[in-house]
Length: 69
Image (cartoon, rainbow, N blue to C red; front, side, top):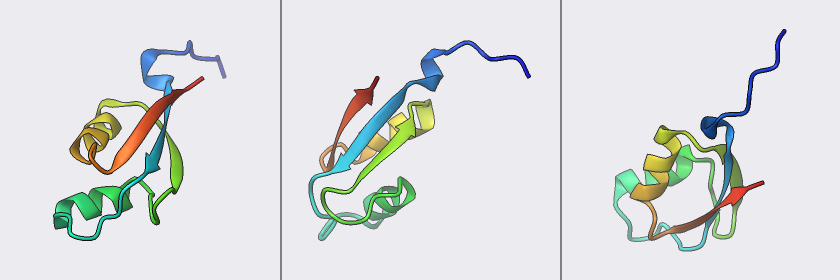
């Protein structure tokens, strides 16, 4: 199999849940769960594609994110 060139879509981001989902809208809680975050201070690494970035933007008041090198 040929190696594919690293593209912008192959970049990863690290997402950390820094605020509780208590009192948030149900769709925000569902987004947090869909990203694989559970408790406060839980961390996941995801590929930075438009779908994931849109989810992070939706719950930007609950998380911090950074690019992983």
